[in-house]
Image 1 (cartoon, rainbow, N blue to C red):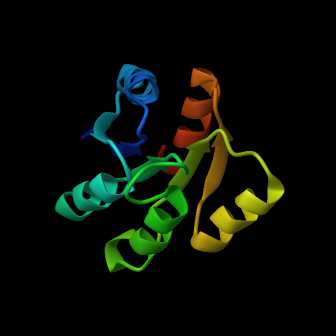
Image 2: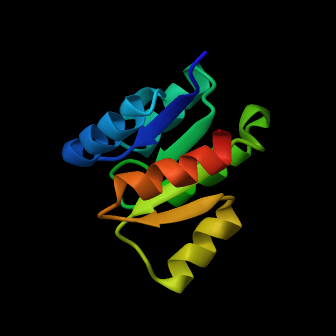
Image 3: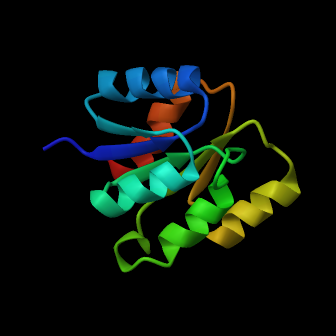
Length: 121
């Protein structure tokens, strides 16, 4: 059975590119338009990996990660940040919140798949 990835980003074009890349590699993808939508969808269906942006309306990526990490079913689920934020302070916040890894936009589809495969095969 295909692994399921939740992609959380308020940019429709980024969600479209990420979904296209991941589906092309055989993953199932659930899309969420912001952190709150992502949290709702993660609670409705357990996923194998979460890919989230940082700067979004309603709930940002770091808040989403902290909230997911507080749920027993997401304590060890890989969560990757995919964001334009590349500063060390923001990366440290992401790591402290429980992020597994960090990718900077614009992303390279091959690099995204390489990191996803390392996390969930």
